[in-house]
Length: 227
Image 1 (tube, rainbow, N blue to C red):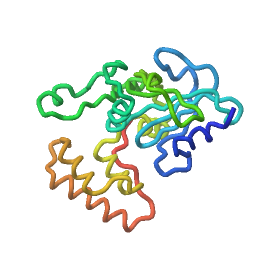
Image 2: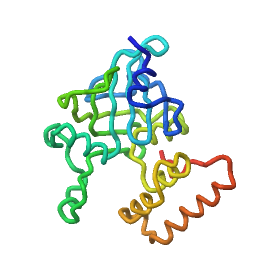
Image 3: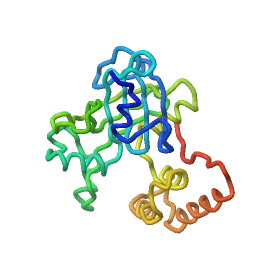
């Protein structure tokens, strides 16, 4: 069997990419996938829009794995391209009231982190992975993942960034660090979100200040990191 790095390449991903958020070995007793534990070594590799759970042996020999989608646009497009509905795989919209009242697109990604709790819980769309580039629609399913937060504060923050969606402040950081979103896309996100009662001018000003500050620095501090 090939290295799991080769499997990542099938998805145009690499642990050397700037969009990498976390890359950790997870003890099998620290993660449940649909209520089950995997035997063997488990690797969590998180990116801005998705994360991978990989079971491997030796140093990097791929055994089996999953890709778990975090971005709701990708989730909706994947369901559409597969010609199946969210109901077909058991996903429920977490913003149903806004879908009905404001005609917002449905959001399916669910993430919970109880204050003082030891675990993150994620419910979203995913499918098994391998060296192939095409997967049948029947491989798509809803996954519920329960994951221990981490052994220390740095690991905890990195894991959280790897397994949850990026909010407004994370998007600002992504724009500076990766250039993955445009100013127009960011402002569109600002308009669509309520940010602690801040006005659009307040938030836009902070964003522009962050850009100005970054131009004079070689290092960009992570913003909006939480535990």
